Structure formats: structure tokens, C-alpha cells
Image (tube, rainbow, N blue to C red; front, side, top):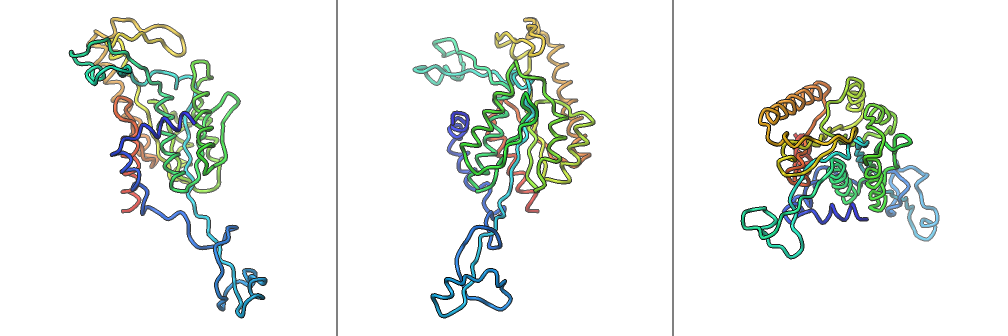
Length: 321
């Protein structure tokens, strides 16, 4: 389980402490009630259903005994990832430390004694971290989890599970559907499919790149928000100027064209990129607020896991008001 293991090991000690209490007290997963899971026996009282009488146990004793069951009230967490070749784009570039190098090499200060290698993290890598953390937290809390995505043959809608091995399989599906050779993203079709994917009310997270949903997608999201507790999470995109200044060669995922080197030294382009990004974020926030969908933006330049935990904490505070 390489992907899920990577996510677990990324949790720092402070983050683990936050995880431990994040879902405590928000709701109880198991309650007494009717289901197929036997709990124990108790004495019959007037009003009990005669179908619950355990005749074999009653025959061995001197009182009428009825069966009690564990009522299955687990929540279902659905993470819907907008996969496609666009997700193969670079989300962040960060320095990494080689084995044997000191901490000064990690920070990239003037004390470095060796060139600091740069590693690229794709949008899909960040999405997998987000989806994997949400799924792992839910499984640890005893809830069902499903991670839906768009594969080459259409929507991939795995059955909700309580098992980490199945969670890993879902994360691999996201990874395999987010390569440069994958078909383009089909978010409209994916969210439209989710309307009829399950009748059970779920906590649903829509994880996308830093894009503005179209009118069709917003209409589907409005319907989903009426059916489920819906949250939209957008992953911020890479500033191409910053990548050029870092000496990285970038190519467009669709066309394969390279980014001109002068982009990293053009202040006008840098300001325009920031202005366009700010406007897109504002338009998306306004559109999502109009249809009643809570939203969050994940910056790949910061610690992703900490940002996801902050999103969950905000959800908990809202639900307990």
C-alpha cells in the first residue's frame, strides 16, 4: 500500500494529535438498533417484537429472552476526484535533501555545500494526498469510504469500504487516470453521474484542479448539495514564473510546448498571472456560495495535510453550532 503508507508517514506528531481528536464527539458511528449484527440478549419486556425472541436461549432458561442488534449508522464518505491528463500538470516545485546532506541543504541557504535538487509534485499527487487522508481518517473512525474518479472507460465508482487495502486500490485508480496520456478531464460528466451514484446521504468532497466549474457542473453540484453534505476542494496551480526562476523547464500537458525562459523574469506577466488567479478564485467562491456549497483552496506550496485538517475542523465547528 505505497500511496496510503506515504500519506501516513507524512503526518507529523502535531498533526497526529490533531487527527486523534478531530472526529471525536462529532457523531457516534454505532448505536443500538435493528440490523443484521447481533449484539446480546436481554429479558423480554412488553412491546418487544416477538420476531426478536431467541427461542433456543429461552428454552434453556427460566425467562423469555430477546436478541439485541447493533444498528449500522456508519457515515459514508465519498471523495470525488476530477481526474484527467490536466491533473498531471505540476502543482509545486520544492527543494529536497539528498541522503547524507545537512539541514542547510534542505533550506537552500547560502550554507549549502551541494546543489539542492528540485522535485516536482503534480496536481494528482496533491489530490491523492487529500483523498487518501480523508479516506484514512474515515476508515479509522469506522466509516465507509469511496473514492470516485473518471477512468478511460468512464466513471469509476467503487463500492464504499472499511478496508485500507480497498482504499489503496482507489488511490491507484486516481493515479493511473491522471497521467499525460490520460483522456481530458470530464468534470461535468463525473458530477452528473454522482447525482444517481448513491441514494444514501453522504459527506461528499469534490477535489478538482484550480479551475472554474462550468454552468452544467454548477447545476449538478446544486443538486448534489441538496442530497449530500457537499464540500468543494480546489488545488492551487503552479506559478509558471516561479518555476522558470527555479530553473525548471516546464511543458504544456496538452500541446507539449515549452515555457519560454523569459517568463520567470517578466514582472508584468507575474502580476497578470496573480491577478487572473485572484479573479478566478473570487468568481469560483461567489458561484459556490450562491449554490450553498462550502469550499476550500489547497496551496501545494504549504503543508497539504495541515490544510486538509483545517478544512475538517471548520466543518466540525459549523456542524456543532
